[in-house]
Length: 334
Image (cartoon, rainbow, N blue to C red; front, side, top):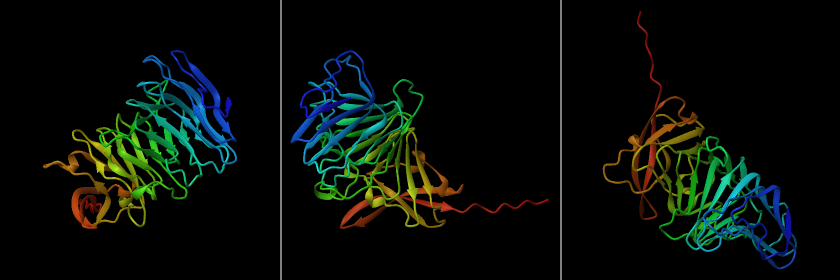
């Protein structure tokens, strides 16, 4: 299903069901073209379902989707296996999925494993998925069967401009969101200039979901990665340990236990392995009561966690440090 050079609604969901078996594709080769994919008009409005959304823009046109709503209603989409993509590399000034609601947020459900592609536009200052003045929920559970989890891979950048108190990006469901951004650095402002995934003010992992950050990938912004009880933060260790300075601080759950899964190169024994930065912990907070550490990098060995304060660039930061104990020698006496 394709629309050309339009600034009106392409797919419109009232209280009925809109299903697209293939790609919902917006095409433009002239000037600026904005595609409004739906209008959410009542609380009973159904999500639009499609195998994926696609840009197809030639020349110097400006094309972007608005995943927004009417009034204060939240926008919704059920994303299929073809995800969000850009079929053609082009010289468009803008290449982004743009979300904007006044007080609500956009929710992206899943009906398959899907990917947010990288647009290939290094100067896309707003990111590939730009959440403006709102928040976005990525639901990894299957829309029709919430007991089935899907993998959502972020090869493109997510940029948020929500206010300081907002949960800008919420990862939920029983599946996994993988941060696997790649490509040339963009024109994101200030400290975000080299950011390939910008978390905005807060990236919340909740409802049993897993957030996996592949080695060398970045999550920057003003907020934290906030873990709820029962969720998992999966990181990768390399020969150069972790790129802990490249992600926002982690906030463990206030109550209950989250899992820190570390795969990759085995961690050294008897040394302090810096895993990530931590947000300010409340007085008396005991890390081992709230973080369960597992993964192949431990190699079945015991792990002791501690929070260490260090000074970097005249600023005091807290780091999560793991000290690995070797597997003990077992003697059997007969």
